Image (tube, rainbow, N blue to C red; front, side):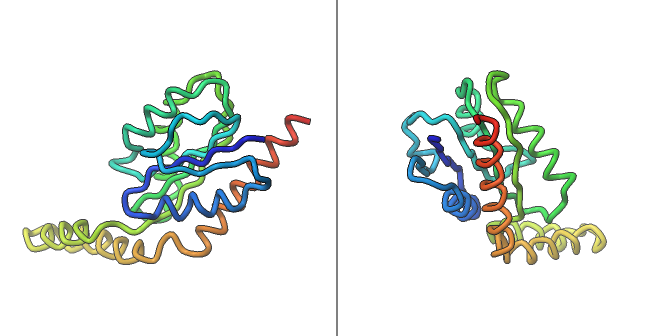
Length: 174
């Protein structure tokens, strides 16, 4: 089975998850590339990773997903907001719509990732400018928690996700 792991990573979070996914894929017929270096190499299965910006992926990922035809596809991503499964699901729904109907979609793995320091500075400025404590404190708490992610548990879960997808594809082919 030919597998491509392609990722868009702004702060390194999604690259960490991509590396864990890549390592969990058995065999030698696999490759991993950042999206900006992807040269169109063909594969039958794609794991496509992205960082989250305003609840969705960046345009390079949209373009890549839109071009795939007849492929097995699984998504993975990172976002700064905490481990909120409803939010993760909404991100998945917004991203997977870019896949052509000829693709076989196998699901998504999402986890929290650290955010740039400018985000915390923005929150602190919002607090100085009068945002209520009840609104700003959860944002600051989430930012501080996100600094620890993706952690080893996140990476293990990503590897398990990839191994499960590969097994599902293999069993379906038999």
